[in-house]
Length: 189
Ligand SMILES: [Zn+2]
Image (tube, rainbow, N blue to C red; front, top):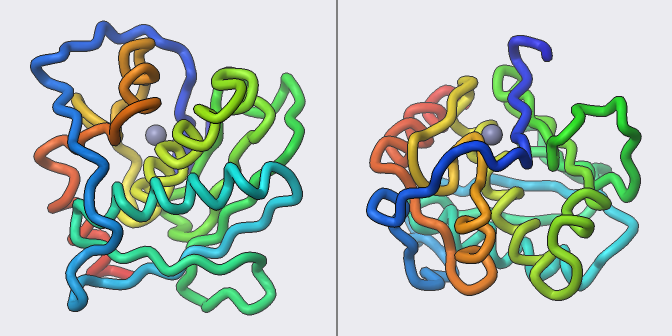
């Protein structure tokens, strides 16, 4: 693993604590009007409905940290400071084994998501919820601009089976440290 690449594993090795993992309600659709705006460009050629729902989930998650996401499809007109997400329909066993996707926080731009692994983990409508949480998780890596994970909430390194159950019905919460680090990272973009 490259030192500047954060890989978010699907391995559920951490015992979930319901006392520490506070689930929020579905949350706000947007942050305050004067909150920072982050352009996010996404390329995909499968699961269009799930991607649309996932974008909404990720937008609500980041709104809780006072960040507005502005989405556009494709990289052609992506702003220079935009976050670029590739949603790959297929993966090979050699590509970051066990991970749903990866980000390069020090590069401050590029995210790669393995759509087939998300669909395998959450077949059916719940796939969109998992994808939305993963988009928010990886975008947060880019915005925080450092390689780190939190002890609780969305930015944990490993989501437990209980986390997956929560994602189907609610938004995962944030660790108390995440918002501050996001806005510190935004100040350097
Ligand atoms: Zn991660």
